[in-house]
Image (tube, rainbow, N blue to C red):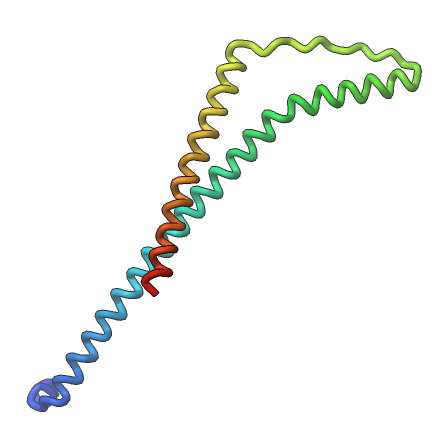
Length: 132
């Protein structure tokens, strides 16, 4: 059967054209898959860094809520005529201060990475828009 197809020049030309279109289509699908994978990776990195930042900030801000709760409890106790014993706040230990600084630096680094990834993503989108 192939012998008959290769003898007819019109069929041979059509088969070659079909193969060429098939290869081009496969290249486009592969490129699209790679772009999608990069975008998903960037989105995961950005989302992860934002989630980490949120958890770090929320964990840092919990200490302030405790002080506010103690003030509220003291005020309610004063209104009820009950004396509330206030615990003294210990100054943060050296280890606590180091931990806070490390968390702050990690947050800054993650936000910087997220910013860079976001710029890369926007640049690729801009180039894709210019090409289309």
